[in-house]
Image 1: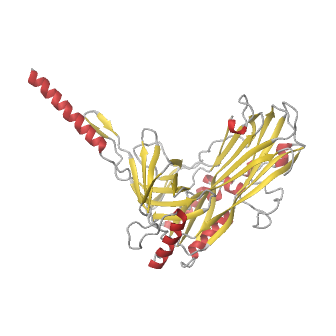
Image 2: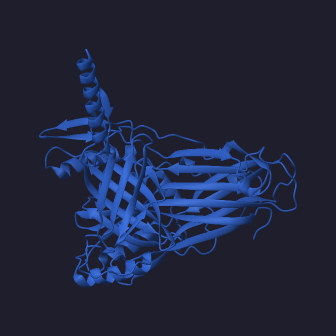
Image 3: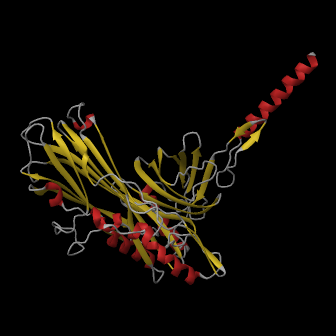
Length: 488
C-alpha cells in the first residue's frame, strides 16, 4: 500500500515537472501556436515575432548606400555608427514582439545596433482577431521606445501567411510626427481588389470580374458631407483657429533628400456671436483635412531615386477629433454630428465558380464606422459633474485594401483647395472631415477657452513593378487655449 502511494506521488511529481518544463519553453508564434493538451491540462503557447528588418528592398543596397544609411540612422537615434562589417548594423534593426493570450496584448523590444531597447508600450491598431490560436492575417502595432533620451514610435505592419511571417514594414516617427526611418522585411504585393485570389492563372479574367464587386465594398457615400451652415442654423460659423501641421519625410537610404509636406490641417469653428448664457447649447466644430496627394508624391520621389519609374498612393483609414473645454459644460453626444454608425456588411459575398477557376469574395464591410464618447477630464478644469470632453473616431473597414484609397472617409478628408498650398481658408464646399457637438454651458465667464486635438492615420503603398511596400504613420494636431468667443 505504501509503495502504491509512493508510486502515485512519484508519477504526479513527474507529470507536474513535465508541465512546468513545457511551459518554460519559449514558443514562437509564427511557427507554432497550437494548444497542447497533456494529462488533461491545456497549455496554449504565446505568439512571438522575431523580425529582422532591413532597408526597403526596392533600391539595390550597395556598400555606399549602406554607409550613408548608417550615418543617417546614427544621427536619428543618437547611437554611434558601427563598423560596416559588424553584425550590429543600425540599418538592420531586430524587433521582437510577444503576444499574451491572457490579455491579448503585445510587448517586446527593438535592437538597434548593439543597443537593446524595451518597448514602453505596444498598442494594437487593428488585426488582433478573435481566434487566439492563429496569428491575424494582417496586423498593425504601434510600439513606443526611447533611444538616447529621445522618444520614438514605430508603426509595425505585419502580413502573415497562415502561421508564417510573410512581410513586415516599420515606419519610425519622432515627437513631431516626422517620418525619420523606414524598414521592411520580405516582399509584398498591392492588393488593389479586396477579394480572394483566383484558383487558376487567369488573372485578367479574375480582376475583371472582381471589379464588378468593388463598388459594393468601397462605396463612396457623400451623404455625410453635411454643411457647416446645416449644423449651425441661422448662426454664423466662424473659424476661431486654424493650424497646418507639416512633417519631414526623409529618404531612408541616407541620400540627404527630405520632403517637407503638410499632413494635417485642423480648424476650430464656433458660433458668432458665441452663446454665453447659462444652460444654453454652444455648438463647437472641428474640420480636419488630409494631404494624400502631397504624401504620395513624396514617397514616389523616394522610390524613383535611382530606381526609375515608381508609383505611390496614400489613403486615410482613421481620423479622431477631440474636444476639451476649460469651463464647466456638458457634452450632448445625442445631438453630435456625424451620427454614430457601424460598418455595413456587403450585399454580395461568397464563392463564384467559372470555367476552370473560381473567385471567392471576402465579406468586407462597407462604409465608415463612427463612434462618439464623452467624459470628464480634470486636466481641463470645469466641474466633475459635467462631461467637458468629447471624442469622435471614424475609421475605414479594411486599412490594407482599396477601401482605404477610395472610400468615403478618404474622399471627405482630402484637401481640395484651389492650390496644393494649405495657406488661407478653404472654399465653403471643401469642409474636410467635419464633426460638431453641442455643449450645455454651465458657467458664465467673460471668455471661453478649449483645447482641441486631431489625428490622421495614413496608409501608403509605394513601389515599382509587382513588388511594393506598405507604410503606416500618423500626423497629429494640437490646438491649445483656443478662445471660442473671439477669433484669434
